[in-house]
Length: 69
Image 1: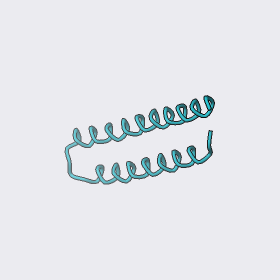
Image 2 (image 1 turned 120 degrees about the vertical axis):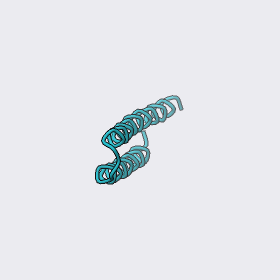
Image 3 (image 1 turned 45 degrees about the vertical axis):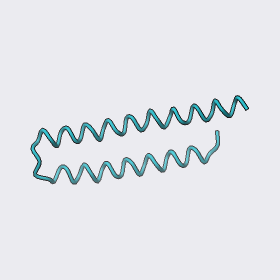
Image 4 (image 1 turned 45 degrees about the horizontal axis):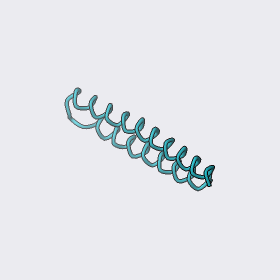
């Protein structure tokens, strides 16, 4: 596997988590209802899980393509 793919995926993941953390702080300080805050936090958590799944899928496809060539 090319190291560039791991670096790009890692940097992208860190940027995503950082952006979601800032959004979480912003939502926590807002005057939304507790239910809306909870739903937004759950959506952010689900986004991180989906990003992890997609990132590892991308890694495995790239690895398998490299083995096939």
